[in-house]
Amino acid sequence: MERALIIIKPDAVQRGLIGPILTRLEQRGLKFVGLKLIQVDEALARRHYAEHEGKAFFESLVSYITSAPVVVAVVAGKPGTVEMIRTLVGATNPAKAAPGTIRGDFGIDIGRNLIHASDSPESGERETAIFFKPEELIADWSRAVDPWVQE
Ligand code: IDP
Ligand code: MG
Image 1 (cartoon, rainbow, N blue to C red):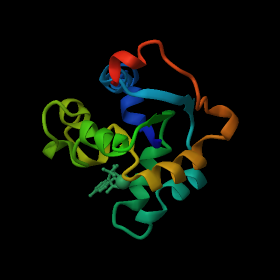
Image 2: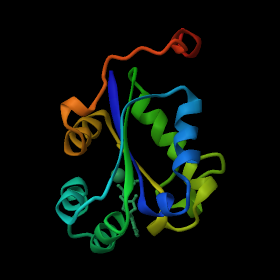
Image 3: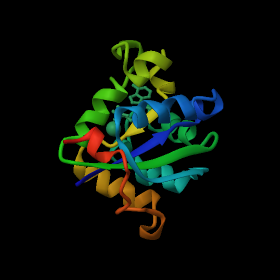
């Protein structure tokens, strides 16, 4: 199984896009194993985005992600799930993201790109552990619809 951490970022929460963005993931057939509304503090933001420390946009990224509540979620699925979610999310810069992707349908600015999704299974594990305690995840629930989504 692979897991991806999803963050519905402050701009999307403020714009009333929690539902539409979750729907994109849900209607694809993806399965949530964790979901909550939180306020990210500076320490958490710096930890999550540690790979970008020192880049020109880093400080504005920290202030963006801490500027209002976010929804964090964990999606689990078979190998390839993380890559599939990245395709669904679209290019980092919404101005260049393909129509039909979340960023390509809802955004226009790289500094307000609505959603985070883990970029590899390894990142998915690292980021899930940053945002969720093990007891907050429901790893083993089964959906009645599963056999209709996956052969
Ligand atoms: P990703 O979210 O598509 O994985 P990353 O390159 O990992 O993109 O960058 C992390 C986040 O940092 C982006 O989602 C975006 O919010 C922000 N960011 C990246 N590049 C820029 C930039 O050039 N200007 C402003 N913000 C940026
Ligand atoms: Mg990234």
